[in-house]
Image (cartoon, rainbow over all chains, first blue to last red; front, top):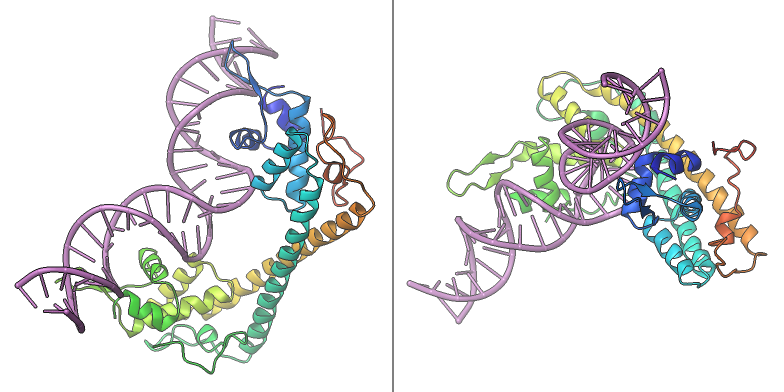
Length: 145
Length: 145
DNA sequence: TAAAACCTGTGACCAACTCACAGGTCAAAG
DNA sequence: CTTTGACCTGTGAGTTGGTCACAGGTTTTA
């Protein structure tokens, strides 16, 4: 298979195939006649695997590690379970962060409803933002020294 | 104020101050003697403003636009409300996406509990991932051509 | 045979910083 | 007066996972 063939077979951009190849996730051989990259069924399996793993939140270095373990006939599954559990915790942390941001935004928006639009006068830029207090920041202790 | 002074006054990394300066958010003057950047109270106000806006989800180009409007004595507030509303929708979309990912991860993890760790045999890499079906992807229609 | 579609490698771009580096400046201490 | 350490300067690279552009070579199709 050539680049575009494996790319469409896996439903990805050909540039992604080239990128994964550069990153060492795929191992095509060269056609000595024209220097083209030639991929086989194993590469397609690896590519589909990589895409699924990405959807599950694995990073490219992690995926490369998994593939290398498999190449060495070691079961990557324990590592997969391990990394995955950590990744889940991370995702949950990200969700919590975004929800906090959302909370800040919603409360700011509702506070803004009763605030007039001011014209900048050299002291303020936009009251909406300047007079907004981050509820998650300590507002009691000055941060200047 | 010199770089480090304004940085500590605003609670940010001096490199961030330099970066914002390069990006045109801050407008220090030069000390002709030593070529140092000199910031004034207005710059500190702009810097604090920018940080608050970042916490609220504004991008640097948006913040620059807001600051430019204020420089031109136009009230940036209507734009702020506008961008902010869009941004809130985006954040909510991101949250939904992450929650979907989390759901995928949790369901995969629970399915994995009853699956044995296999050793790669040339046909599979890691069953855990390969035999996982993305519930959000159409599994009925093959993607290969 | 000529055009269209594909291949190659290299390098830039996205966001918002952060860090490293090499060299210049300044304040206080010895 | 000199040294030391903290600070300043600009530039460039690294982060993440691709995507896009470009210039030139190859293959396929009409």
